[in-house]
Length: 112
Length: 116
Image (cartoon, rainbow over all chains, first blue to last red):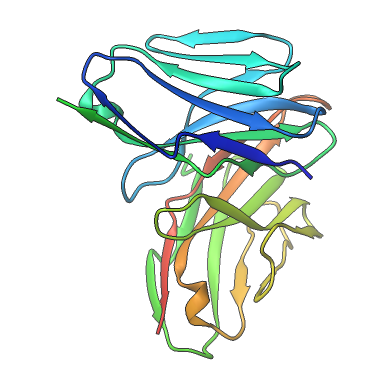
């Protein structure tokens, strides 16, 4: 089955800096890669996703890139703000599987 | 739309007790999932369902059972609670866009379970 690895496990940045979180996946059939943000005590919420037919997607300060050849995808947050502090999860699923596998999460801390 | 709802929000069980965690969605999604999240850890898939009457095991199914008699409801049953089942349980639902599209998941608010 699919295996998703996520790095780093913790990330601390200064407000205004950029943050990058990287994930790798094992199943070459995976074609959908969402990113979730989970604030303390809350449910995971989808912040951005990318499908395998595109290499990059942007939404304001958040972008995701995908390298299918290397089987890795990354989340980029620019101009970080304290409210970006949370745990971020990457995930992967494929068209021939009905489940989704999550990375272990990255705890991002943005220091004011 | 209420989205995905879960009850109860919190529960404390004694070892050996049983309980059912309720999950319901009003988005007419075919796919539903149960995850557990241990403190400071990621999401582990317990069971999932692709439609009424169909369920499949995930990564960590031992100690749990599920049923899916309707599209809307997907209860999770713990038969003999153990301290190792202390966790936050999230239910999620999703849909697939077309036959090859991705499974965008929508999570419920979670149930915090403690087994003492």
